[in-house]
Length: 134
Length: 318
Picture (cartoon, helix red, strand yellow):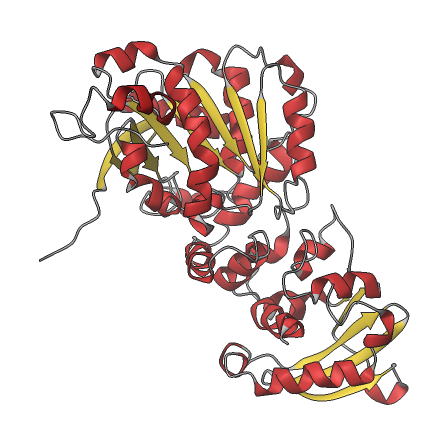
């Protein structure tokens, strides 16, 4: 089990740590250059708003507010699912967001407007895989 | 000096459901025909490692064709007039496989299919039991729902990238990066709507749940599924195999595209199965004067025979 395996780990600091790693990534700068939008990373009952511009995370916020003007899509899952997803070698059925969200498994919910989710799937998949970096 | 793979590619004209399909196929090897079926939305390149493996091609004529609409096989000439989106059906798919085998005049071939190519083995067992020596179904089950979805063919979504990325997580994170991304690349190259249309078969028209128990069990069937397959989980394969008399089921530590995502691992997994398939056809073994030597018999055979036959073909080391 990774160090991200308990609920306590998935706080704003953890999200910030991941976001900074995203912004240092040189592949994402290429494959994510048209990825601009806002999505929610939902962990248990907490929503983290992630604002992305050209593949870089511009802002993160704990909880949603009226000032946000909403978001495009949300990826919501229990902390236990994120804990498995973020392991260096994630276990079967938890190694991919579509795997987790697939109707057969339902370890994650994809909500909101799914069009930008699918449009940016490659960049998003890479972005989230950086949760696994040491 | 130039280096070539031993693979040879050709086109054959296949008649199916009143149309003629110029069909691309590749082959290498001699012996029992082993016809390999690619997965949805991609093409025969997925079997390039097996086509080049001398341990397999010493005893099997490995043949891989691109289904119409895929790879170097074209869609029907009037595809632009279709009044419905492309949808692969169980009937066309199984009919086409048999028509292809007839076009090449293959005698009792073995089918090795993956994913939708594995699921169609159930149709083949139900409809064409006497055509084949054995069926090897990779990543297959009697019902695999949830994949016939619009995002995979939508004008606002890049088809190649979304199709390829949607299947990336089906592979084991421990398969080599080089081969996982090569598999991603195959997927990124499919024609518009072809992956989704194939998934009509995979998730809708290959629902065999009420039919598998009718499979007689006379035709040997082998099921092999990797533990990271989230479209057809090991449990789904096991439940299917349990309903079929005499079927064998193997679960291994890999993903949904074993032939291309980790060919070394796949060789370990498939070798015992191929050894059993060889044992099914003693007639053809005799024809080849003992060329189908398996590892299990090598120890006794080795003292009397050289490692290669007089014609230079290598013994199998499965």
